[in-house]
Image 1: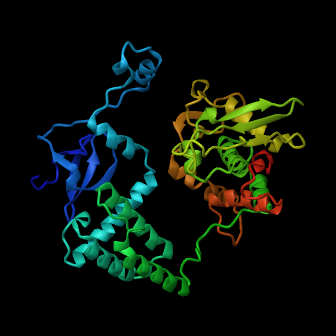
Image 2: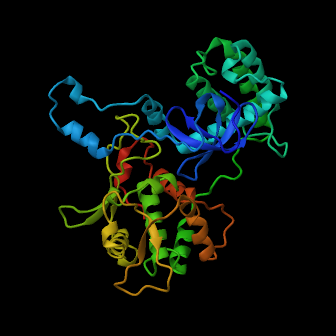
Image 3: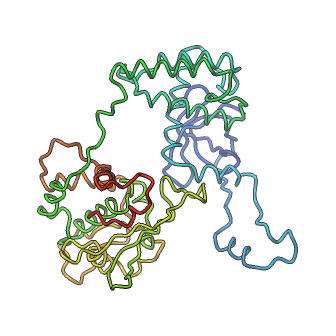
Length: 409
């Protein structure tokens, strides 16, 4: 393939088109996917230059088409299968891989490419024989530093190895960095380097989040940061209840939630409760069909204090959402009205999904609004840590699924 220039149109993995926005080193280009704002770095081996102005996107079968094909009785064997283009195969892999993992892999590979350039090694890493690549990996583990010349954490070095391993596997390298005999030396060097860093005090996670305590939560209630007095306090309260009682992670699990994932029920004694039936979580992506919850988490009504009852908060949230934005597949967390304080009976929320950036800063914003003075480092993960702490205090084993029925708020 001819050398690409800024502005060229390219086809990625025979699947979709993009535009070159920057020429990087070692055969890499920065691309912007056509029709989106998504930008990423890609090596030239995955690209095919297109005529100027041409774009190309392979459409996957729509869900309605797939459903029709599935439910219609075929006349012959061929009628049982949806047509699949070659580009769809890689598309299934790319579309369903963890986005954070993909982003980190790109960063790590770029870092390793820079190291290879410093070593005057300009071959693609999958073109380097195992004995030579093993030596380069040894040097990389020993020499790599942050931009401020500080050492990386031990787990970061393991992450670099995993990213390189993923890339080599995708290229059909034929050897494994983690198991092949040809890379035993680099594994020993990585192990020794991690021990050295541990002796220096690395790996102790000084910036880890502290669990939020009952005192801090009470301060949030008293300040109105969580409650039912305004739209944002409802969002904050709903997020906190869902995290503490359902064990959801601070950002991704909440961002993936749909309105139909939480449902209201009544038991045989007329006690109301909310039940989580989330379709996908970080550790339950659907890859392993056996990895599912044995017991669906439940959150029971607080009859003693209706003003702090999770069921009442949920009902108020439901009644102040747009009526046509409460379908099962609609986002759970949506934007709030910002034009003055809504009155009772008004629509408090708008038809707009709350973004990941806003979700990731909910705990910080709640604490700032409450002028919470504490020496703890409180982040979104602090609420999930409170759940783990309370389960431990109640002697619930980590593998005991019954904790899903224990209300903690």
